[in-house]
Length: 207
Image (cartoon, rainbow, N blue to C red; front, side, top):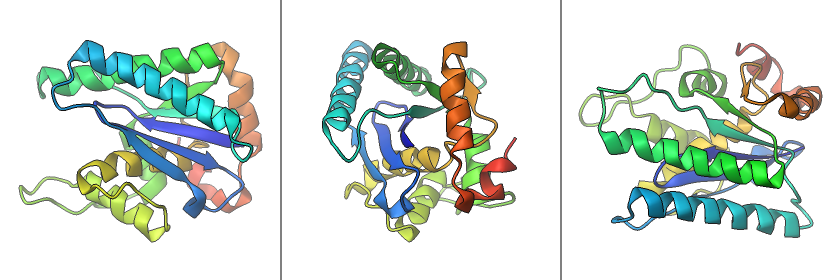
């Protein structure tokens, strides 16, 4: 099955994965916005870029229309602990992506960061820390993808967005996936049935 994944933000990371192929075959990139792009322009452009991305896949005989899409789930729990923009841009990007997916009839689900990180890195994994002593999940994602020979964008300031989208695509069969509409359940069940044997307990144990 073919899956697309998004790490929604002002510089949304995207990934395309054929579940029957090695992880090194994952395609990825970033929907980059101008630094001064406001919220309306960003939502407008992300919707346009996702539309063009899906159309390009559908025109590609090796890709075709995606069977399912995965997004990192957004939370309201950070309100008061972060800036307004840090909350608004991921949510507006998510809304633009979801609306576009619905228009194309592509089923989707969401995974919180805490869930896909356990599935991707393994339970008990401790990421490196940055110069400020904070957990550096960005560099962890980049390192993991590089170890799988996934080609990331060359700009280091953007690569982590694509890397986390790749991680979401790899974790597309985690049982804890939240499917937000009943009409998408059959596609989700089909994705579960098509689970690659090589995934083993990695995806089955993440509840």
